[in-house]
Length: 217
Image (cartoon, rainbow, N blue to C red):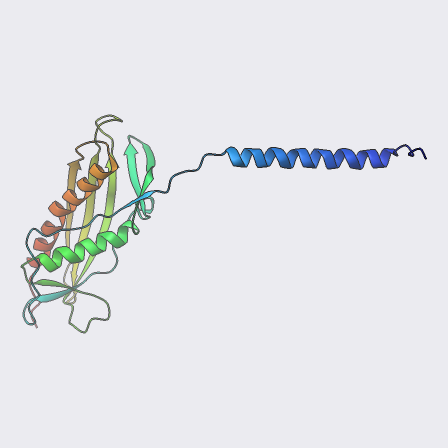
């Protein structure tokens, strides 16, 4: 028994099916050939006191309430921000273990805990009295390539501080700025430059707050 010749409609369906099959095979081949990217390495920055931290005194001193620090949007994630002139980029193979503002506020708390002055941070919900509110606006938290693309960048940290007393007196204003050149262009060296920068800046901030002194009743 001879086969009947295929109709034009049947031929069209076969052609469509063949085209879909070929496209699916091509797409599968493309997906299988895409390189797999390595997971980003996680890093942490912070404040490490040179001497062991002693417990804060139960009496004396004054309390300082510090809301979460404000970061520029481009530096407020867990990515390491770099700049080269007017160009902005992120280090593709590295991440902070937490968003930069979280790690920064942890470093601030550690610096005040290590400070020997009278100021003590008061967290929200803490029953201790807060005489002042300390607001920190981090205007720069980045690695700047100012010495060429292969040299270690300058880690620049700029913080505007506003200390406002509960007595409604005029606030105290101060800008703190540090710049530390990384020893080379490795991520570990850049992270260490962040640590060195915070080790210079945060004690200055704590001493400045200490100088405000307790408010008079």
